[in-house]
Length: 136
Image (cartoon, rainbow, N blue to C red):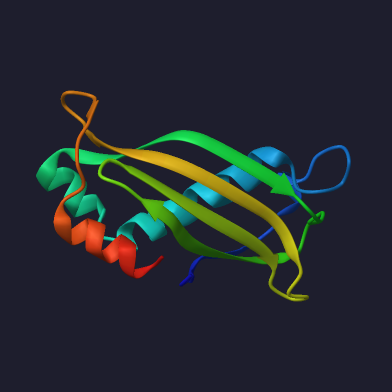
């Protein structure tokens, strides 16, 4: 499986909760930012969405928290395509502590290619399908 770096950042104090670690809502935010970069890597860019009125809608997300992150931690997300079908795509984000290299969380997502006007699933264009398959 090919993976690419889709996010680099840090954990800010305001992202931490009463337990002293990064709150789950900010993991979701970082995974969301990584998803935009991964989708762009397969051709689903802001320009593509504007020109075709199509995009990917998330339909399922599962997160496994494996290690705490604290204010000041620097993080990196590496992402890969797990599978792609005619209309459905699955991908995985691995969030690492960039200083220690430890895996901190894994996010598995499923999305559907949609016509944004009709709000219905539609097949991926062949070029996007091929780019996603190259990242399998």
